[in-house]
Image (cartoon, rainbow over all chains, first blue to last red; front, side, top):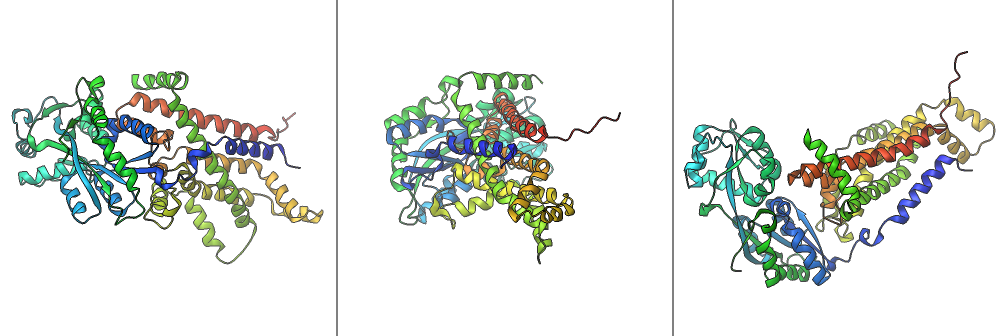
Length: 278
Length: 237
C-alpha cells in the first residue's frame, strides 16, 4: 500500500510526462532541420530572429541557430556538425573553402567595427582617422584595452589590427575577457577602458554603457559577412538541400529587404548593409 | 538598485502581460529539469540504497566516485555530452543534439550522483538493527526495502529537492547541448544569459525572479509533503 508521499510523487511524474509536448522533444528527421552555426554578434543583434521565422514559415524547415565564436562555427562546419555557416572572418573562411569543406561562399552583407572608449579619451583616439594609429596611441598611453580574447571573428580582426601596428600588447594594460561582445563591453565600461566592437552590439547596449564611439569609418574596419554551405560530398550527413534553401533565402529579394530595414525601427539607422552578392 | 525594481516590475509584465514566449521558456525549464530529476531518482535511489546496504570489493571507489559526482561541473558534463551527440560524434546518428532530450540527458548526469549520494547517506543513518528487526518479524526483501524507504523518507525528499535544485538552476550544460535556440531549447537560465549579454538587464532580472519563484514553488510543495508527517516532539510538562 503506497503511502501518500509516493502517490504524490507518481502523480507529479505522470503529470509532467503527459503534459510534455512530444512533437518538439522527439528527434526530428534530419532533413527538416538546418543547423546554422554563427557568431555571437549576429545572434545578439536580433537579425536572425527576424529572418528565421519568415524562412521557416515559407519552407517548412526548422532552423537551429547555434551562436558560438566564429572560430568554433568554422570548426563545426569543417566537422560536419552544422549545415550552413554565417561568419565574418574572410581569412579563416578561405582555407576551408579551398580544402573543399565549405562550398558556395557568398559575401552578402557587412556592417562595421568601431573603437569605443571613455568620454575623456585619455589616448586621444578621437583625433585620428586611422584604426592603426588609434591602437598605437592606446599602447603608448598604456590605457587599459579590453579584448574579446575568445577566438571570435571580432577578436581575430582586433588581433590583425594589433599586428598591423607592429606592437605586441602587454599584459599590464591589455585585458582578455574571454566572453561575448556584450560582456566585454560591460567590462570596458566598468574599467573605463577602450575596446574594439561591432556597431550593432554597441548600439544595442549603448544606454547601459559609459562608453562613446571614438573612431569609425576607417575602411579597414569593414566587417564582411559571408554565408557558406557544408559540402555534402565531404560530409554526407549535412542537410545540403536545407542549407541551399536558407542561403538562397538570404540573397533573395525578400531576405535582402528584411536585412536592409533591420534596426531602423529601434535605432533610426540600419545595422547591416547589403553587398552585391559575389 | 533601480535596476532590481525595474526587473521585478518587468517580471510581472512578462508573466501577466500575455507574452507567450516567457511561458514557453518557463514550461520548458520545468519539464526538462522535472524529467531529468525523475530519471535521476529512478537511477539514483537504487544505486544509493545498494551502496549503503551492501558490501562488495571496490565499494570504496564507487562511493568516492558518487561523492565526486555530486559536484560535477555542468560545463564539463555539457562538453562531454556534446561531443557524444554531435553529428560527428559516436551517437550523432540519434540526431539529439540541440533538442530538449539532449538537455534532459545532460541534467540526468548532473542530478543522478546527487540523488545517489544523498540516498546513500540517508540509508546509512538508519539504525542497522531496524533491518534485523524487520527481517525478524518476517518481512520479505521487497517489504523490507519499502519500509526502510518509508523510514528514510525525510532525507530522501531532501535528495529530490537537491537534485531538482541542482539542475533547474544550471546553465553550463543546457546552453552547450541545447544551443539556447529560441522557441526550441531556450530555458530560464540560458535566456537570462542571453538577455544579460544583450544588455537587457531588466528582462534578465525578471527571468531570474521567475526562476527563483518556480524553484521556491516546487520546493515548497516538496517541503509540505516532507514535513506533513513530522514527528511532534512532546512539550515538556
